[in-house]
Image (tube, rainbow, N blue to C red; front, side):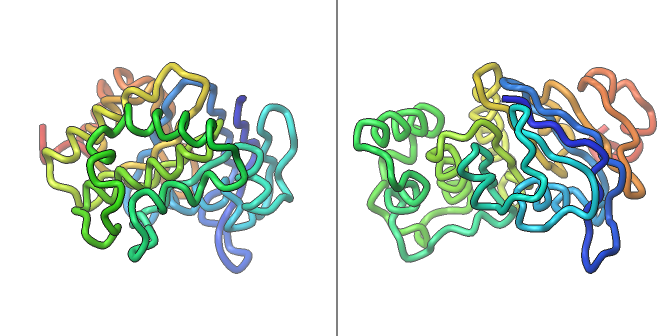
Length: 236
């Protein structure tokens, strides 16, 4: 299922943060959204999910117009959002956090989805009964992504998954996320760690001054001196 955004404007109190956004996420691909702090990356995610109504434009999933629909409807159609900060239910166990997104399906489907999560994050299966508050930041991020996958989405929105994680955990997390490429699910990834984000992306989208300023493969973006100076100068 292709997610297609055309002419989207999104912002707050009627004032746009982003304007004229055209973007498509195809099944099996990972698209990384890059840009400085405050440019509107998370705002874009919220508008796609429907928790922040768009100010203009059109959003379609598999040809169905979802522009005026609620976040609940978009979730039921196959869009899942893993927000910045993880937002787990701290008092619930890992198992219970995962099952929140699998309500209303039969036991066989639940087992199948848990198997998918366990393949991606086998470590989670060793502490399914541990409360979420007792986990490390990296483990909590695994649960948050796993919870998103438990809804069997067609489009997965990941907002800053590496935020606050140690470098080794970031490496392991992105190795796992790389396995999501090539299936029937598209992934839109917002990530300030440009090098990590582009390492698993099929395409990168750069946001600047409220608009998309550049789109290209990771190789094309990393060959651009402006991108390297702006985002990779500390590690270059």
